[in-house]
Structure formats: structure tokens, C-alpha cells
Image (tube, rainbow, N blue to C red; front, side, top):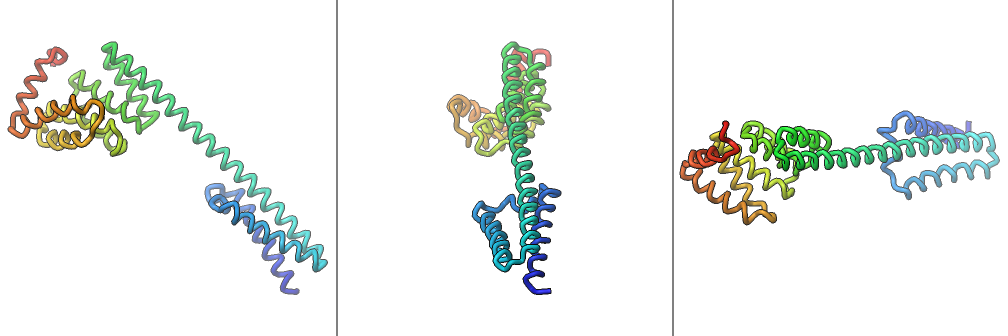
Length: 242
């Protein structure tokens, strides 16, 4: 059998395998990372071989190559379309979750403004479940626990939030600030000093207001007078029943 016949069979089987592979294995789609130019070159090479066979009057071989070419690219195109549809659906799902998270967050804010801290905690947790990177929700969830005097859960949620949100997020500084408050009330003064010092690195519209408070707390903590902060906190009417 002539060499060109062997080559034709080899190419045809290879193209057929490529089409079947793309169809059966969308996660490892052969052509998904290739540029338009490289795909065009692949198709041009296949068509060039088809043209060569036609010029050589090898019509049965040319027919085989044509069938393999159409079959391969039809399956590849179909699978590429499926992948694109899946990506769009995934993007839509992410958008819906983010939108839901914002709505739940607003409901949590409203509940907090009404003094219903337990309801606000539920809403903030639901918002975080929809969007684990919602930095504002972590901050207000921690603050809600502090309003209830639940220092342990305030610390827990703040630490989870710090693991998930970006180091460049402006809400990270505020979350560090409220975590410092929770640590002070839990008598973890050494950790509180470290956390409050970190919070000073973040500047936002409330930085001037909070900087003075942070510096005052750090001064007392470094002088081993954390109990003074705790006594002052417990005098707050919010914590009269604690």
C-alpha cells in the first residue's frame, strides 16, 4: 500500500479520534486553549491534504478525509458550544448569588437598625453563605455579636472573615478593629495588641475617628491595664445584663 494511503488513513483516524475525544471529554477539550490562528492552521492543513488527494485522483481516500474532517469539526464545534453555554450559566449563577448576598446584607442592616440583632445575625450569615467574600457582611456580623456581648462568636466570625477577604480590602481594617475589641473582652490582651496594630495600617474615611480610639486602647494594653477597658465596656447599658 502506498505511503500516502497510509498517511491518509493515519490522519483520518487521528482527526476522528480528536472529534470523539472532544465530544466525550469536555473538561479536557483538545482545542479549548488554542488561538483562532492555530485552529485555522489545523483546518488549513487538513484541507490541504484533502486537496492533494483530489489532485492525485485518489477520490476514495479524499472522501474518507472529507468525512473525517466534517465529523471532527462538527463534534468539536458542538462541544465548544456546550462549554460556552456552561460558562455563561456559571457566570449567571455567580451573579445571582452576589445579588442575593447584597439583598440579604441590606436586610441584616435594616434588622440591626431596628435593634433586632439576632435577626441581623441570621441575615448576615445567609449573605456570607451566598458570597463568602462579602467583607462588609463579616464586619457587621462581628459587630452584631459585639452588640449582644457575644465576644466568642464575634472573634470566631472575624477570624473566618479575615481568612476569606483580600488584604487590600478596606473593610479588613475595620474587621481587625472589632476583632481587637472582642479579644480584649476575652482577656486575650497580647493578641489584641497585635490585631489593633495591624488595623492601624488601613486608612479609610473613619480612620481619624478610630485611630485615636485604637491608640488609647493600645496604650492601656501595653501598660497591662486591659481590665480598665473591660470595666468601661461593662458600664455600657448594652451589657448591663451580662
